Length: 444
Image (cartoon, rainbow, N blue to C red; front, side, top):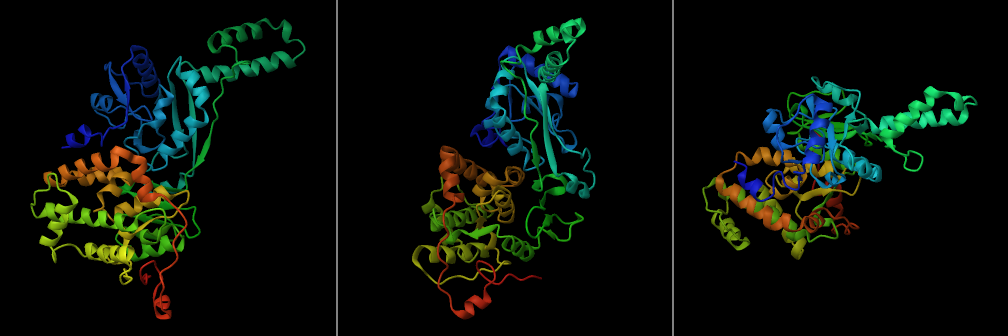
């Protein structure tokens, strides 16, 4: 059950409440305009795209604005929607594209939504992704939008007619043209003083995650392109790695300089971050063993770690060794790419696709429930369903207390970037042996 998550604001949180009769009626018109469907609800919530979980349940279609998972449609009732999450996202880039478009057109959209809903679509040339290879055809997204009564299109038409009226010598005597201008002006207002024009912004989509085919990561805009996909999925790229091929993924991330070791990052308390990851591993093991985790403190988790010493996963020991080094300068641990702790020790470097890389790392280190929730909510919700009630309770309480209470601080503590620390002192033999952050990355 997801009631725990909903009640604590961890699912369907920060949605925009629509209850004004005027806004509800505008939504109905826009929904009819886009999909031919309508709603009988007078009170509902919407996400960034205008998708409503309540209306999805009413229609029996949670993808009523995202048919076939491509060319997502949207309904904008207020520019405040830019702060809301995007539910049922099929592409990792959709939220940033829609949010950036709203911000680029905020003044115009504010004026338009004062009178009507703005309905639109994230358009690309692909309408069907029944085959994995079609994913590589999605390279550019164009945002197209207008009000349900065509204000933007009418304003553009009026602008053209005004230019014609000014430029053509006999336009003063063209009664049809003048009548058309008057009729359009009644619908659009004064487009000379208050121009109604939206930027048809184009966005590239070369590096992305998609929920299609079990979850695929496509990196086309890096020095050494590759795709990372589940078993049984094939893409026409020179390098395609399975999610189980940890050494190859590690080498790909290093080769393109996409990751950095947490223990060598400045601006964060590396030891604290690593110890928290260790706690999450203890929680996972203790839940499997039937331990009571209700109200468990860090001291309680340390006691559980001692009680189950020797039973804990190898990842716990690897992180413990690294935490000792970060905190007190203990021996430098060589954690190679196929070590269970390896991907827990990394985070994305500061670059345009840091969120995408952190999403991949979260999937490769799924016991870190905080990173999984922040970076890969789709996988978090899917994994959550299989947990014991004890773990569900602990995780929901922890995230509500430690993350939702101050999201910005939590994100900065985990993903904030500063200049990297100096490398630890190593012998010549160490340098020869090391390829990755912690040890030799096996290319096989």
